[in-house]
Length: 378
Image (cartoon, rainbow, N blue to C red; front, side):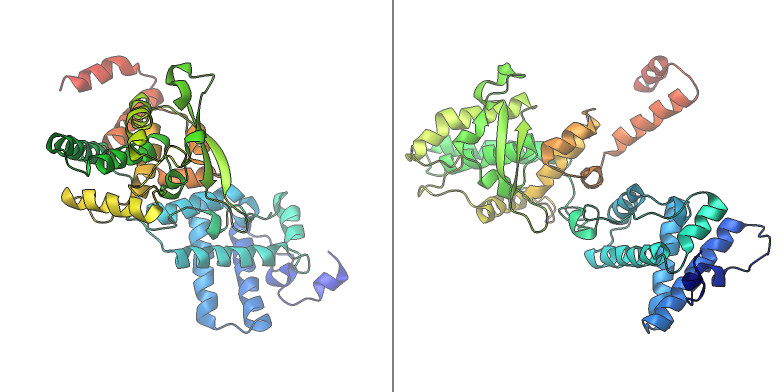
């Protein structure tokens, strides 16, 4: 440790008692880190004691969550903590920002060579703190809905009820020769497409006919094997990103093909590029998609918190429940980070119980077959 470091108040060696054998060195070093950080904030920044105390509590919460000391923390720990705060504790955007801010300031203090904590950790534990916050896992990049717990996946039953309701509206309108039949049919296909390809409403609105094309790996879907999403959400400071989404739900492909071949031409605007048209020949806008969803939701008396985005959440959750590779789903929905996809996932109790029983079977080295059969016969 350099002489200049030894002269700095709140440096590591000043917070630790020199020459004393520590019974629990990890706990002692962590306490010294927190004490030194508190003094730095009080003396160097002039913060109020309550602010300093609140920040310490946030660090202690993170420590309890990871069950690790700061010199073992990793970026993945922040991802998992943020996911837990959102999905299990319904923390708000402001809370997430405060927690990350506290962790960021604490890590800045530990990594500042002036205070010597890196050298202390290397000397005592053969490792040292490393940066765990970066542009990719800070609050603004975590999730689309960022802690809004109401925007949940729709259950399979809710999805089926919703789609059946719109289809029944189409049938009634056709039988009665009503003008709204085209609109109802379009709406039915829009929402099935959002669910069937895991889209945002804005991404669905921006689709053009040319964005549908063949996938050599899935020739059975014809020209509907792949969807090119040009209006995908971009990262902070960048424009929209693009991605290709593979078709994986045959019934959704069938619905979309029927609309493109038999319904869309009836709107009478063959040169318009948009996939979804209005009766006046314009592109269907996001607000219109949201309003139409709310209309059908309210007719069914479903919970008011449900929005079109919940269908995207359902796509993630239901595919995970069906055993689809989470990394594939992450790429399908355009998430840069697995932690974001995890936040979209809220598996059903039945699925969770099934996974638990499988885990127990594996843990005890049992053949799950007979036990599964026994459970099914109860």
